[in-house]
Image (spheres, rainbow, N blue to C red):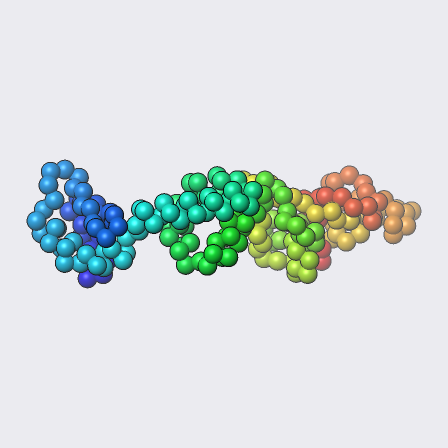
Amino acid sequence: MTPARILETLAAAGVTVTRHGDRLRLKPASGNVPGDVVELARAHKLELLQALPDPEALDAMRAHLLAICRSHLLPERLVAELPDADLIDCELLSPEGLVRWVHVLAENERMREGIAPDGWTQASYCHHCGPVRLWAGAPPHVIGCPWCHVRRTGGTVPRPAITCATCTHQQQQPNTSDAGMHGCAQGHRLYFAFAPHACPDWKTP
């Protein structure tokens, strides 16, 4: 019987099981824990200990991550309310990996606030987000991008500086040069063809 199946059996009997160091704690929804449930947990104690997170170990990991935040001048809120599942996954990372992961959390938070990572200045077009800032050398057109999650969760997607001359919606005005004023098929105001500006409808061929 797998640990998952054992836990399902215990839950069906109205019993929750938690790990405390090398011990298991069985808690019934009401009354006492049935004898057969106790025997089942005892017979598979080793498997359950391996499958269940250790609260003390999780607390120690959270404390370590908080220390990383303090030493790198990052907001402690990044890890203060992390779910246990994320803390368990952290056990697989090296010390250097933990530091990098906390920095990724900080970078993700800044992105939700509309702040592009350092060096993300290239204008690319995302099929879902429209014009976005990506890293140097990123493809000019992408099906999805790192900003997609920001957009789906209600965050701000910063728009890159673009020009009408590179947009499929440009409409060159009569009697103007290639660098003159261009209109827009999307109804935006006139801009000089090579004047950088932000536009949510910019799209390249």
